[in-house]
Image (cartoon, rainbow, N blue to C red; front, side):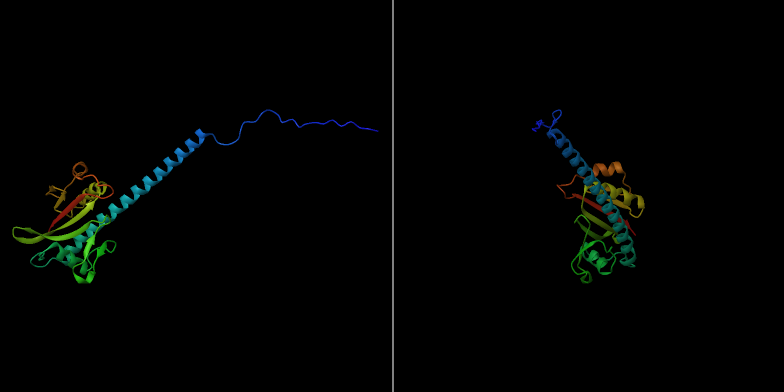
Length: 201
């Protein structure tokens, strides 16, 4: 007995749309990823910048108190140059250990640098013919750090004068508005600002 078999083809149903991401969706995802990366990097830079400023603000204060405690004699600060005074302060262990020192600390001729690669010097300051004061000079300070550092040190009351580039504040007071106007823009990634803190006594 012969049986007839019905040849059936499975029903594929309605036509399905092609799977996968379209070009527009890929572009949107890529842009979102770029924005997230930019935000993260911006936050990291801001945090790093604030950390550097806080560290250098503390360093300036330490240098000032160390200079007063270690280098002042009965005749004031009797040094003939910034190089000799800075070298002596390093030699006596009066600078923060976190700062960069070039040369042999025990030699008396080593040099000091801040976190931005600028030189840091301590020099005698003459008033009425006597070396009864000194200055702490910071070079290559970035613009944002210049504004923050100047105003932070101003608030401590430790200094009698602050000079931002060519502008001197003989009372040691600097407002954010003043610092914003007087701190100059960076040259690429290098700071261009010079800060001088003057201490009488």
